[in-house]
Amino acid sequence: MMKIITILLSMFVVTGANTAIVQKTFLKSKVLDIRGGASIGPVDGDMVMDLAKAGATAYVAGAAGKYIATASGSSSSDLADFVTSAPFALNALCAAFAAGMYGLTSSGYDGLKAYTVANILSLVLKINSGGLDKAVDTLLEDKVNTILNLALIYVTFV
Image 1 (spheres, one colour):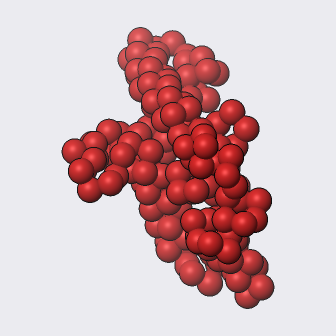
Image 2 (image 1 turned 45 degrees about the vertical axis):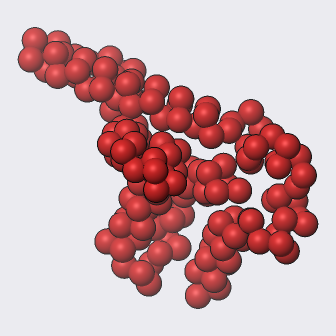
């Protein structure tokens, strides 16, 4: 139970970084206002979307390479196997979702927000399918997706 409370509180702190109390802490400073948003080192919103598009392109190319290798009877490369793994597949799906949601820009959802929402939704659905009583175990089993979602929340909404 304590694990669930800790994770929920950390998500509330990260997503609530625009409140006056949290603005005075390390999460929100005047430097962020000058820069125009938050970043994690050199990773900002623009870089996140560039990496998402590059990953989606690599996934499509890897999937095509694996298909051609299978159809011709040869073996696919390790690189094709790597870029068609589950994290790349999820990235490709979320990037496609974000591109499809581009028509919602008048409602405040740009590509980065749509990409972040798609990633969060995938994690929430994974938690739901594993059972809410095992939410922390699900998050710890998929550390890459959990860390990616926390970073996306920070970069997108802070």
